[in-house]
Image (cartoon, rainbow, N blue to C red):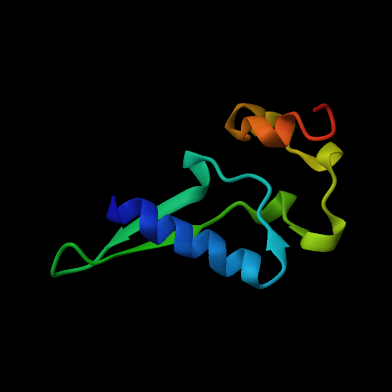
Length: 79
């Protein structure tokens, strides 16, 4: 549960700076543990598909990580 909160805060930070990551997959999440537990840091990597919020288009979705997109994103404009 705490991992999810920290990940959400990381994504929120990126979004609050006007950036959409574009490829959040398990391969692009680094987990760093510190002593004493349960302190940890999450680092997002793989920003090659990142775009500004104003610049994002459904056609910009990374096809390599297509299965990680929320259904409402995939159905955008089709409902």
